[in-house]
Image 1 (cartoon, one colour):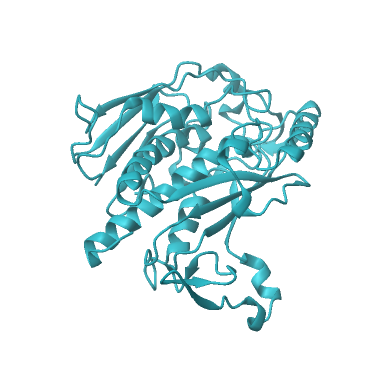
Image 2: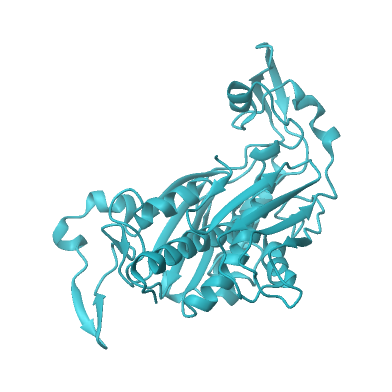
Length: 364
């Protein structure tokens, strides 16, 4: 159902924001891949709450527990890997008012419309806390890719917050710079501006959205399928499933509509016995299949829906009401979205790598 992603490398997340915890089951992971709980914890600490004044003050340790699928020696067994993270700082009382009142732009009404019931405390499965399972699974995918495609690198960063933009080209982005500032932008020169914009929005009881960019470097050519499972289609599925993501593009994206073919086409040439392209408007994907160039993606994230300003709404009995957001929420989701974007990219890539190896016997 909707909680499972992938074909060969299959990931199923479970748990609610204010339940006992959040977990994931990874099935289809190859055996004998080095994996420890520290490997998973290193990725989870990047998305956990309470990192800085730019994020929700909810205090969760987000310590992972590997329940199955990994040997005592720290190697995958080829069997399902179950990972669990306990919830330790949930405050359901903050949501009492939302039990019968729909929060604007949240999933409250739509969950009621679909299921006739919803986990009103914390939003249940609609909460971004569900992404713990994705990031944990992404850590497993990272370990697999390190074995099969050791040269491959996935790197995401905050490109825009509100109207403050980072103009650094993808080829110049460095992980050490992204992780050196709380906004997780690639240009330290604009990090302070982005931080001030987020703090100002929060001081007004408001929130901000923006753009996360992602590059996959040295991906092998040949990943993806030519029809329904085009690589960009699978990436789009993955990225648009992230909470608050409202837009996705690869390469030139929507700019392609404004460029004539003579300027948009990526001319081929040979370099070191390898087919290369002189430009990369295709974003590393042509005909749904990777061509070996950098895979370039951009994701638009909406402003956080829970704000401290009073808004019009209705109750579950269809009465008019007003609501002022309560609870602990990020004034801007972008800094914590970066590791989630990277995790989803890795889940797509490892699935296509394993499918390519199974069907054609060649990869990397």
